Figure 1 (cartoon, rainbow over the protein chains, first blue to last red):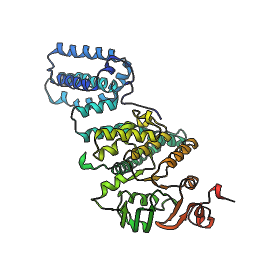
Figure 2: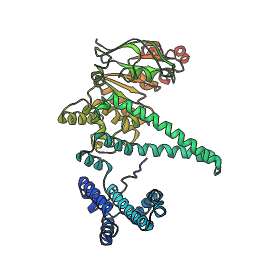
Figure 3: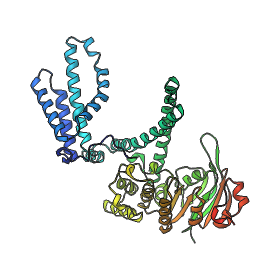
Figure 4: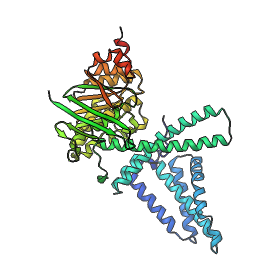
Length: 208
Length: 241
């Protein structure tokens, strides 16, 4: 099956996708640090960040709707973490909104980075930037097996749908929970097999 | 002829106490293609895993004249290429080339050699043009051939294949068989595809409940219907009279 979620738009030919991955990582990291460190009262700076990111989104040629969908998926976590601020601090609401804006800007810049760069180019660039090999290996496994896992979920879901005959009640929820459990066990077993396959080709964990 | 694999009195129990292999004695000669057949759960994969030091049961295992121990492990893993049944387990790197060069780079070869061997391996399986592709975008037949390339790049002298034709369509299976026939190394092939075993292997061992119950010429064993049926197998169609 063909699917790619982390770098779905990396094949789009845009100014951003043509830039080197290494440059983009450094730029993105710089921007994130700048946004985090900017005090909220510098309204002008934030206006600049917003304009910059809108400009980059425009350059990337990626549909706006996609950014919104991704934002919606991540923002609940931000809100969950930040929701207590208004209750424990004076001017809490201002800080909350500030956090929220910063989070949105940072998430957008990370989406821009990951969506305009092929994942393996990203990994190569991280390697060039002297990120430890073990971390890069973990990331590359994540990327490689996301697809395998999604196929597995799809197959299980199909089998479940087939036998649940359109019913949607608590028993289906229970089956879904069982499904998640068996998926976990399969994943664990696969990890063991992959480790064997690595060892078979001379891998030693101490070298990682 | 040189004996490249010598197994003496190999027994192995799984951590939960289940006996998986019992008193296995097996010699494999250089250049031979050996088939390992038997019902599900007979211990075929468990036996194969011992040949690469991935499991260590109570035994004397000797590969290419090297005794199986921690000291020789690296040499043995270089000499024995293991192709797992599921290419999704074998191909764990994002791109094809990274996977094929994974083994060589663990051997500490220099960059030039790694590149040369990896390209040579991809050429041998006729997939050099896929080097920069992502593994998950390949067809199963291609994944299988790349899996073989990932061990060929280490220049093994023995090739171990667990169920090589599982889930392949007939054309991909034919391609695989032709590829395996071309490779000049010693091969051990385990599986249920008896026609494939018949075509590739000169000798076959039957494994049941962890024991070797028969060892001999492929045609003689595969056409012995009472032996085959006793051990959960059957005489392949092409040998039935």
